[in-house]
Image: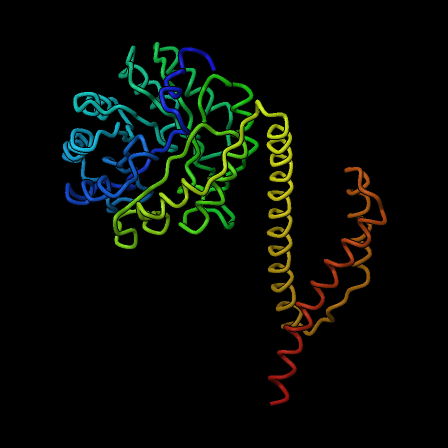
Length: 362
């Protein structure tokens, strides 16, 4: 790792950043800090200003929360971190001696905002972390880092928090690991932190995603931690207790690529993860196709049209075989695949037809 980003090596173990999604009160902050294991967590985080999708939502307590962060630092010895979204946030955070400042996903997507923050931070010796943009755009992510570098900001890091998708998946934000891995290949001197809280959107998946990150040799984790997660003012479902955080951090297995066997396992994990993501996408696409088939079934039922349409089936098969050939897939495989999907579609539509006949018989 380049000397300019050697800041992360001050820790003798992977970096762990933890604390509430939002600062809510001094009492809340102090209780969480007291319960967090200081041997496992080096940085205490809290959102002071919260960018929200819609107005009239809780948008953070504002500058008063910086007093509480500073008190956590003074009484418990943690380094402290918060998100900044404009030059005024930067000034206030620096006034309160915040050690780590991160640029959020909604800010990273806007080069004007990043430039404003970068200029406000010019020559700073603080650590500045950049979350990936909400949309899957590697160049925007790298461009944000380059804007900070252009202002002589030397202690930089990236945070992988996943990418927004229109279609619902098991993740709040699809990790799309390959984008983060491509970032690591292009910018190997920039430490990579994983934010499993925002990737998952629920507390149940945090360990799995955290372990996946370390399988890929990430440099640390940022995990949202609350003393009463279910009562949190923002993102309650994805926050965990300090005690659960300790369990996760102790359970995770680390991978080191200087070991030949570990390198093999890391590369194997990368490839298997790509397969898992593709399989998930395939299943979601099939489920969406069946939803459309159900609508077609309802339409056929309304107009008393037979479920099976031979000419349509012939057209589907021929088009699929042609497309599969272009993609390097054998006709035999495509035939089996499309027949199975078509049969499932027919069964869905038959259920709709039978439901109608059953109701008529009554």
